[in-house]
Amino acid sequence: MSAKKIAVLVCALTTVFAAALDSSLYPRMIAAAGGTFLMGSSEGAFRQTERIHEVSLKSFFISETEITQELYQAVMNQNPALFKGAEYPVENVSWFDAVKFCNALSEQLGFAPAYTIDGDTVSWDRGSRGFRLPTEAEWEYAARGGQNGFLGELTRAGYAGSLTVNYTGNLTIGDAAWYAANSGRRTQPVRKKFPNELGLYDMSGNVWEWCWDWFGDYPSDSVYDPEGPPSGRNRVFRGGAFVNPVNQLRVSFRVGNPPSSKANSVGFRIAQNW
Image (cartoon, rainbow, N blue to C red):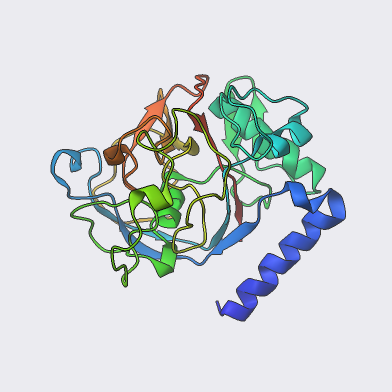
């Protein structure tokens, strides 16, 4: 899709925001044109859990920032975060809290909800235009910069913003991310560090971000638009947080926790079908 058409789509989505509620509260949705990449890495100790496999994705939208406390409060009428601040990412939210937020935001803005929630059972209508969590594959593709980043084999996985083909090394981890060495052991406002190649902020650091998928072994064959294993015990979250060292901010690094778990280092960002 051309850059002009992408701009029109982003503009149209922004118009929907403005017509429904105060658009200043909402993160900008960034268009991630689809493509094919080698997900995972062949880096040393990580190669088993990050087994490289080819993934092809459809185009999608993903929020420019992690969901802020201001937006979460406006939609859910509560703010569970430990580190309070309107422009700070919401944290201390479970995976279930995140999918409920997605449905509530969809309903407020006139979209059919993406999720059907029945107790602890959550099903995803993949045809819905409602807001949702990114899949693990979408998250990594976006963190790597989409078509603007490096989509080949990662023999040494970097952080979000360091993977462009033309990367010169001028952007340091401290320029791009809040992590253990510079965060003051707490979250920080979104959009204060340099964005990655897609224009996304805090894909590495600040808070971990819930994804849709159950945590499980990667497939060995090529896959198209995957949504992860059909079941499991833990849901994936990605990206590292303010408490973590550099090696946990790698764009391919994987972690999972029970979907009911909460931590002051875990938040989320949202996605939407193209």
